Length: 382
Image (cartoon, rainbow, N blue to C red; front, side):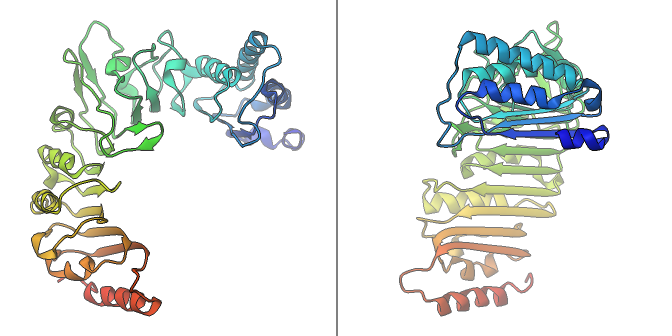
């Protein structure tokens, strides 16, 4: 940083990235960051601040010399940094360490900036608290959103892009209810929305349901891109987007849940992508029935299907996917299914076969012959 300050380059910089691996006493690291930032006037051009505290096997357990005193000191350092970097409107804070002092630092920094932010990522919003509000946010990630703790208020009308990763089933849309006198929550400017579900950071096929409060009327009048990743969706959730002018829908999860997408009038889309992975337990007959129901009537330009076919004994004659343009088959061993599917996917323009290893009877030469045969059979749509 001294080099940047001495050359004058910092006056032209717009983004500051600080990635650190704390040692035994992280308060010393925060003091170092504060001192390194130095002069107030040199940093007024910084608009984007990204802070990451990484973990290793050597710093898994960090120590505090003075407990509460260090926490208070960390909070003061956060306030000092916010004064030095006074024009930040995009904030990303990420700590992979369960350390009370670092969490206090991140919480305080978030609270100092929250009112002026346009973009916020990697926050645990419950740490900021409901007494913080923002009328400027256009992009936000709500990770581990949890209505058992107070959430900051975000004006929904301003948001253009949003990613929600709820914590278990405790998420509430109330954090977007900026006007407490109204039951309407209208995301007027939102064009890109991603709803994701995880259990302890791991994607699962039947993950957290995103619940709706009966008294709220939620709408997305200008939504174009919708991603539903491992969300245990219900018809009520999908109905939220029935009136949205969607052009792209990405779904990852159980195939039976993907059937709920049909209420969205999929024919108006420019792209539909459905991925079913995780080695989901589903009968071959049910897979064929559900996939046929989904991919026989969609008429959008690009239809992508990614599927894990491990533990399945699918007969190609039992499926018919005339709408598919892109297909990805994944399995542990090389399968013959891809070779047999040619007449069942007449509009296919892209095929990807992922096999992690050859079968016990396969040789390198036979595997090469298999993929060469695929290239010949799928040289062009029939």
